Image 1: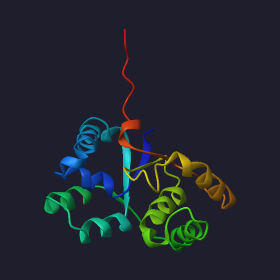
Image 2 (image 1 turned 135 degrees about the vertical axis):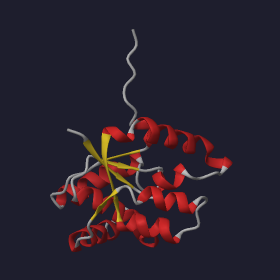
Image 3 (image 1 turned 135 degrees about the horizontal axis):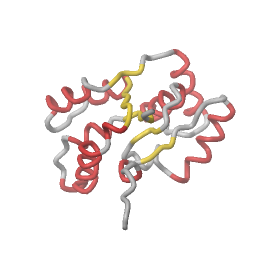
Image 4 (image 1 turned 60 degrees about the horizontal axis):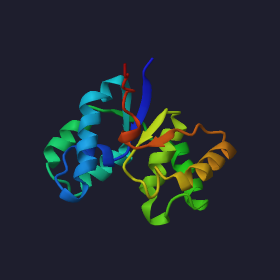
Length: 158
């Protein structure tokens, strides 16, 4: 059975990005996309779609075409309530409610992973324990919040 991944907006956006300042992340994202994505059930939310549709991104037409191929999680009132709890407990800055929503979707829908390059607010070792505690209080699954670097198939050495 394939494991499930929630993609925040950084993952599809990096597939089409051209900035030299994040070249390594772009290359890793593209390599992961080419080699690993078929090993997982990929999900995205309306929050990611809104962020990607309204933001300024290079190669936006290709980006939109890409995300149209990904399964979309349905919005649910509970997701928004969970995101508010994250904000109320200072897991995410109030000005960045999208990050709280990404985590809420992945947690509510019991996905295995939340894949992101957002290492300030999501894939951050200093936040993971706080996230687990808040999710446990709400009786929620806590997905592994990781970057594509952490989700490549193990290489076997002879």
